[in-house]
Amino acid sequence: METKILLENGTNELEVLEFIVDGNSYGINVAKIREIIQYSPVTPVPNAHPSVEGIFMPRDAMITAIDLRNCLQRGQSQPGGLFIITSFNKLDIAFHVDSVVGIHRVSWVDIIKPGATVTTAEDGISTGIIKINGKLIIILDFEKIITDINPETGLKVTEIDALGVREPSEVPILIAEDSSLLRKLIVDSLKKAGYDNVIKAENGEEAWKYINKCRSAGNLEDEVKLVITDIEMPLMDGHRLTKLIKSDDETKYLPVIIFSSLVNEEMRKKGEELGADAQLSKPEIGNLVKVIDGLLSR
View 1 (cartoon, helix red, strand yellow):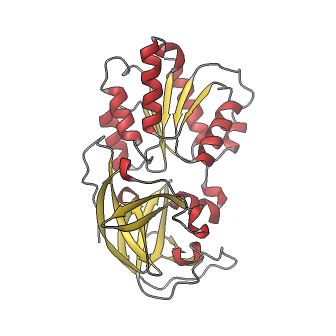
View 2: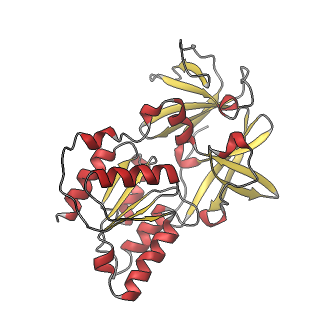
């Protein structure tokens, strides 16, 4: 099963693939999916993480298979079912699931933040919940699942040390990122790189409200010099935020960097069409600092 992103640009919508693991409904952003294939036997990897089933080669590339049932603390998957092959953070990973239900087109506004409705096992690896026809679908945080299995795939904060000693800067940078952990890591990394004045927003809507508050006060040029945004965020995603900034004559001068695990060829085209000044994949924190330096020195 091949998937195609059919959404228009900057509409604040996403397509969620609903799938089943151990009788429960979960979701993944279709933009992360490369293809869905039938389960095939894998070769176990010695001393691997318990959630790693093994490796296999569906085509000419080696892919690691992850047992989602194990990640959700629901035991081990048995042979059978499907592999959802994903592509994000420059990684190709197969997730073993029982079955696939279908694709739902939803707005980021309709995604509920995880709360008491998710179990402890799902709490740390859920980014949101959607209600479709009275049924709750838990959208899983696949980046966190992979980082928990192999921390080396996460944000490469050590790249900041390689930049050496840098002069402090009070240039105000606005960042929109819904993950509290990633938000802290990015802010800490920017501060280590000398950028001390970082304004934090939990999603695109919060960032856009801050920009408009500064605009109303007549001090936008002093309060925001650059915007960094994730793509996947509740209420308003990064593509919608970029579109709002770049299609407004009073804000389009603001440099916008899309910093997301979803920066692949398809998403890069979308970002370019919306006017993003730069687009980087999540692990590249060192490159992010270099791009910020370049955009602010223009």
